[in-house]
Length: 159
Image 1 (cartoon, rainbow, N blue to C red):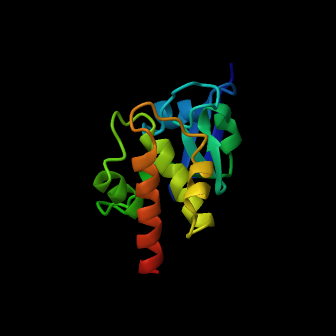
Image 2 (image 1 turned 30 degrees about the horizontal axis):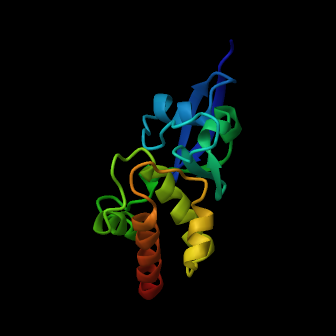
Image 3 (image 1 turned 60 degrees about the vertical axis):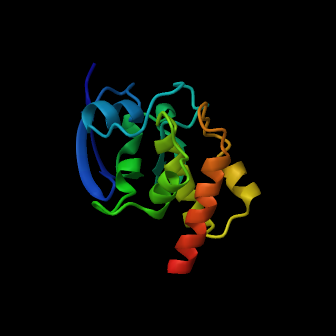
């Protein structure tokens, strides 16, 4: 099958790759671009482990074709930190022990960052609703919610 040439922006950097027309964005990110933060948990868009943003919209990269990234702006968990400086969400996840095995964490961080960009002062109910598409079998969610709420407070105070 003929490969498709795609030019896109990933985490602020213009990127080009060749992909099979049937290849998912998740596979492209992991196998072609070596961005392994997004994980394949289910392959059906039910777990959120592969969450990225495309054009500012939260998507499951296992449900998006790599070819659909043409001309789009993609953000992954690898783009959250500023060099060696962790994003407040990353720091708060560590402080609140809101991660264990790490499979779900990248997708939750991307989803939480997307939420806080849209709503810097969410209620706990809004955080729980926004993260409902991200499944975690290890933490029980309370630590995750506390970490997101704490990061939101810190980010509001810093701005």
